[in-house]
Length: 239
Image (cartoon, rainbow, N blue to C red):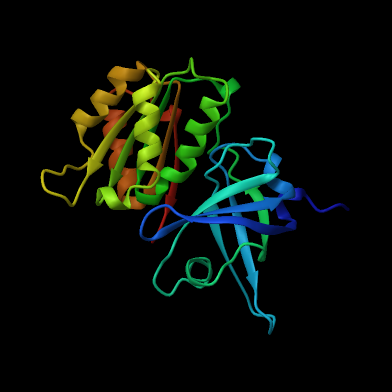
């Protein structure tokens, strides 16, 4: 029996590495999976040492399929992280890793799925939602989209310049930042959700990604604003 593609490990070559924030790097990989995923999905990454020791971790895909034969991951260097530490400190263009996926069918979006889109992210949870916005920009700009993005500091906000530029140049997109640990900062609240909904109107699709605490808080606020729970798809990370 042929092994399903999602369970098969694929060779991938690093083609580019670039800083995104002080702790996050963009890693572009050439791989056969590059045209087989939907925005919002993730892949497993596996590293194998010379002695045979293996370590693996899951990462959301930041890019939208674009015909380049590559996909982009945004990897946050974590203390004692075996995989993220290698990407942060050792990885070089030309190195090879293994990928498995794509994973996460329900937490994914493509233009024909429609909208409007209400997106809410905490920290690095913005990565799969960034992929959705990039996919929308490829041919579905008529679909309204609002992103609520909670981050501790502006310096830690992933792709914030790209998101702000998109919101400034595309009237169908709005960005609602909640900076929690800077002077005058705020957390996601009912007013922020109301501002996002005022831009999209009643959403057709809702995606929330972040820590357990963020996802619970954002989900409660969005439901309290009158959005049907059945529209909401969530993805959580952390303990």
